[in-house]
Structure formats: structure tokens, C-alpha cells
Image 1 (cartoon, helix red, strand yellow):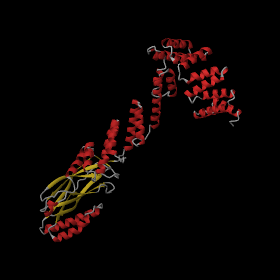
Image 2: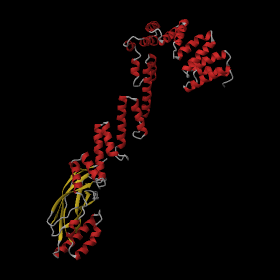
Image 3: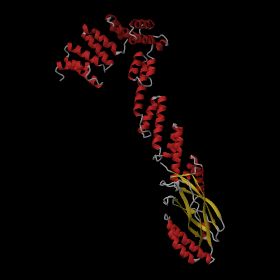
Image 4: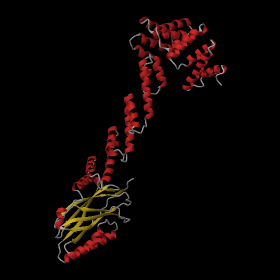
Length: 510
């Protein structure tokens, strides 16, 4: 957590006389200049260097030699956003004034600034900066130094101090001076300090990405962008943060959280739209590393649910919607599936053989009212004498209520019309078990052709085959029953255990 410091600034003004015309002075100064090229964090060394330079200036003045007389002062210190608080890690602007009161131009002036904790005396803000332009005799200039406050501030007050660290006089080299600090960069930094915005930070980084202050501006931009993104809390705002801050290496402080929010908001959008292609795209994005895959299992489940509902919708029957609602009781389409299982839904449709058959199925399965069910099936057949589903439904009702002849009549009519419902063959096969084993076996076989996973069909066909002493075929059927039940997780079901019992008797199961 950043600690805030009350802004307390001590303005220090210092002046310095330096000359370079006298050879004697040059030799004296050059010795000390070599020592002054490095940054001094030690206050004693700094004072010593300043004293030696003043001594050289006094010698030059005594000999009436051309030299510069530089006066330097701090006029104001501004913290970021002018809050009056200096925070660890922030930028501050130090407004300074330098004036050359001597009789020679200074082509290079190095100013040393440092911050001292008022209580402990620790040096906390060392800074050494070159003044970029020649300073002619009699010229006065105001400029701003930008300082990055370190993270290790511990006390309540800091003092910004400064003095001339090095001056070089050379009138002949004025026009050849290479600029060390860009004026535009200083102006941009001042603008950021006075009013920090995303745009001016981006402008600065686009021009000075390798600057001394680039990391600090990047941190500032990071915080600004995250504040904006989290306050808006939209997919686009987080996406903008990732695009501008994270990049390929995801270096931003909040990149992980931003990506997580993008995934969360995208998932909320997918749940509202609820389309297979969108969930499939999400899974692809997870595989490609765009998302962490927090909702992968839900996406897979949703795809399965949509496909299942589309299958139920294609069949468009009471039975199909009931099977869907039973399996996906808490999912997106379960409410719609249940709505389509009601009498009101089908009564609102045109009275066709299909809608009448669904009403009949609801009366039979939902209300256990077989009389009304039979009435609606018969109405469907009056509209279409060859409507297979009506014969299937009538056969099932008569079979369930013990009218075997009526059941057989309707099942056989459905088979004549080439029904694709395996249950018709299975139920009719059961009816023929008492008096015609071979026909029963053929009906079970046809049921298996329509549904190869009908374990009951294999079981009862196996029983009939055993009775007819086709033992090898019976053994194959009983083994198939066990295989299907185990695949479905029902290896210990009643049907599987009965098949195992037959195999034990036949010496094929231990």
C-alpha cells in the first residue's frame, strides 16, 4: 500500500561562480570535474564539491577572467494532480529558476536535486539533471524538473534540496550543443502532472517509450485504465485495458483480473444468446489461450442441452419433450419443454392427427385417463386412416389395460404401415410368446434392428431361443444384455442379474 506524505518543501537557493578561461583555473576545475561527473548521494561530498567550485570561481574573479555566475533556486514543488500530498512512487514537478549573472556563457549546467526525510535525514529522492540549452550571460530561465518519488518513503515530511553540481563554460561550443533533455518531453510530463489522463500518458509513451520516466508513466496509465475499466465494468472497457496495457506478455498489474472479467462478461452474454456456435467458439478460445476456461464444463453441457432440445423439437411429441425435461430439469429449455407437455399448448394448435395424438398421450400418460386418450386417437384416425402414431398409441393403451386382441390388432396395423417404433415390435413380440415362439423371436429381432441398445429385446429373445433349444444363440443374447447394462452403468440391474442366472445354468457364467 502506498503511504502518503504531507507536502512540505524547503526552498534552497545557491549560487556558483565558475570560469574556464584561465588555464590555472581549468586545471584546478578539471580535477574536480572528473570527480563531479558521477551522482553524489553523500551530502558531505556534495558540499565539498560545491566549495571547491566556489574557490575556483573566486580565483577567476580575482584575476578578472571571463566566467559564468550561475544562480539556482527552487520556486515551487507540485505533486501529481495538485493534491498537496506526495505519494510514494508518484511524479512531482519541481519549478526552478537559473540565472547567469557572469560574463561568459554556460553551455552545460548540471543541477543536483535530492530529497531528505526531515526526521531521519535519509536521502530519498536523488536526481541529477542536465540543463539542455546554453545559458548566456545575463540570461534567466525558468524550467521544471520531473522527479519520480521512490517507494521507500517512511516519514511525514520530505525536503526537496538542490544546488549546482557542475558547470561547463565554452562559448565556442554553444552552437554544437547536443540536447540531452527534450523540451517537448518536459512539457508532456508537466501536463501529466497537472492533469493526468489516459490520452496524455499514451502520447508520452508513444514518443518516449525508452525514457527514464516511461516505467512510471506506464504505471500511472495502468492505474488510470484499470480505474476506468472497473468503473464501467463492461466487456469493451476491459478489452480496451487488455489491448492498451497487457500486450502479448500481459505485463499490466491487472491483466489477469481483466482477462477474468472479460471471460465472465462474455459468458453472461453467451448465456443470454444461447447458441451452439457461440459456445463452440468459446471452447476454441479456451484452447487457444484467450480464456482460462472457467466455464468450459458449462459450455459443453449447454451444447449438449441445445442439441437435445433440437432433437426433441424435431420430433415434436409429448414423449420427446418429457424425456428432455426429465434429463435437463434445471437447464435453459426445460421450462419450454414442460410448456409443450401441456394440454393448453396442443389445444392451441390446429386439430391435426399429430396434435390430437399428443393430446391423447397427455391424457394417457399424464392424467391416466385412457378413455379420453382413446377418443382423441380415434378422432385422429378419422382425419387420417393411415396415421401410424394413433395405431401405436391405441395398441399401447389396450395392451396396458389387458385388451390383448385390440392391442394386437392396432400393433399389427402399425407394422403394416411400416412403423419405425421398436416398442411396437417388442410389445407385439411379448403378445405372441404364449402361442408362437418363432414369430415372437422375429418380432424381437425387428425391434433390435430399430434399437440395437434394447437390452429387454435381447433378453426376451434369448429366453425364447433357449426354449426352442437354440442354445448358442440364446447365450449370445444373454451376454449382450449384460454388456448393454454395464455400458449404461446398470451392471447389477434386475435384467442383467436374470441374464447372468441363465448363463450360469448354461455353464457360461461364473
